[in-house]
Amino acid sequence: MNMWLFLTAVLILVIWLLFRRSSTKTETPEEVSVKYVESEQNDLKGFELTNTITMDLGRFSIKSGILKSNTNDAIDTRSVIGQIKDPARRKQLAIRKQEEFLVGNEAVRERSIVGIRYPLIESNFCVSDYRLLLKSSLPKYLLKSSNKNIIVATNNDMHVDQKGEICRLLVEDMDVRFERIMFVSQPTCILASRGLVSGLVVDCGHHDTRVTPVYESCSIPGLSKSGPVGGKVLSDILNKLILDNQGKNWTSSTELDILHDIKKKLCYVTMTPNSEIVTPQRYILPDRTAIDLGEERYQTPEYLFDPFYNTKVYNPLDQSALGVHRLAHNVLQKIDPDFSSVMYNNIVLTGGSSMFEGFDKRFCDEFGRLANKPSVVRKIPTNIDNDKSVWLGAALLSTTQFFEKNSFTPADYNEQGANIIERMCFM
Image (cartoon, rainbow, N blue to C red; front, top):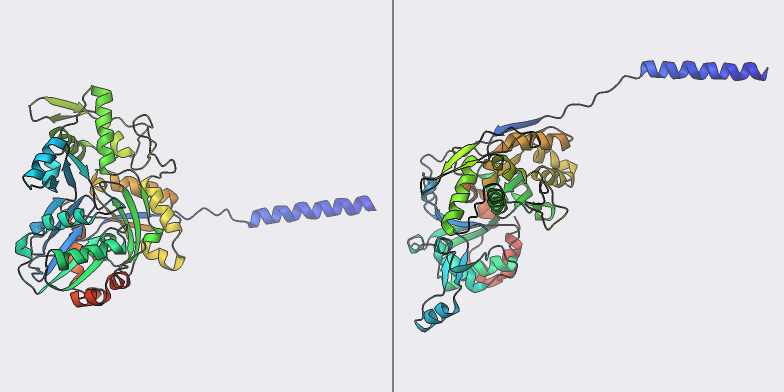
C-alpha cells in the first residue's frame, strides 16, 4: 500500500513538472537600443547679444567676447601662466620692474623657457594668477560701456570662494561696470547650446574626461565622475608610441604642436582594437620629410575606453580608472529613476577627444552593452566649432528667464558678499 502511494506521488510530481515546463515560455531579453543622433545647434543667423559679455573660464582655455552672428568673434586664450625659469633672467626683470610672467597664448609659445601652471585646475588658487588671466582675456574695448551684463561659465570644481574672488577682481581691481552678473556651470552651457535643459554631459576634455548630470539647467556635481584620460594624456601616449616604434622623441614647442596636429588628423577609434588591420597614413613634416603611422593611429584613442589598454605605454595612477562608457553608465546608475529617463535620452558627447573618427559609434556600442534601457546619444555636428560650445551656450542663457532669476548686481555683491555667490550660483 505504501509503495503504491509512493509511486502515485512520484507520478503526480513528474506530470506537474512536465506541465510546468511546457506552459513556461522562454523569455528573451528585450533588446536595448542606443540611438545616435547629431544634435542640432541653435541657429545664430542674425543673432546678436551686444549687451552681454560672455566668459568661458575653461581649464584649457578662456573664451570671452560679445555674441554676434559669427560665433568666431570670441577671443580665445590659453588659461595658463608661465614663469621665467632662469633665476638670473627673473632678477634682471625685477630690476627693470618688468613682469616675470607670461600669460595665455604667449606662455604656450615660450613654454621652453617658462614653467607652466594651470590656475583654473590647481586646488590652491592664487589671486594674482586669477588677476593675470582675467586681464589678459578681457580686452579693454569690451569694457568701455557700463550697461553690459556678464555671464561667467566655470567648471564644477570651482569653489564659491573662487567665484567670489573673480567677482571682486572684476568689480574692484579691473573696474568693470556691469548691470548684472551670473555664474553658471559649463555642463549646463553645453546643453543650452543644443537647446536642452536636462541631460548627461560626457566631456572628453584636454586634462581629463568628465561625466556630469544636469537637470533643469542645474548641474549635479555630487554625482559627476571623472577619468584621467584627456587630450593631454593622449598626446603623451602618441609621443611614447612614436618613440617606441620609430625612435622619434618630440619635446620642443614646435614638435608638440606637430604631435597635436597628427593626433587630430590621423588618429581614429576602432570597433575591433584587438584585431584591427590598419592602413598606414603618411604625415608630411614642416621640413618636408615624412612619417608613416600605422597602429599608433587607433591605439592612441583606445585609452579613452580602456585606460589600462597597455600599461607599458600608460599606467593610470588611479588603479580604479574607468573607460568613458563605464563612467557614463556608473553616473546614470546613481540617479533617481524619476529623473534618469531624461538623462538616458540626452547623453551629449563633447570635448576635443570626442571628435575622433569612430568615437561616437564605439561609445554607443560599448554603452549599449551596459545600459538597461533605450538611450539617445547626441554629438555636436562636425561643422560646428566644438571648442566654443560652452561660450555659445552661456551667451544664449543670458537671453532667458534663467539669467534673470540667477544673476545679481554689483550692489547685491557689495551688500551680501560671498553669501550671494553661494545662494545664486549653484547651477
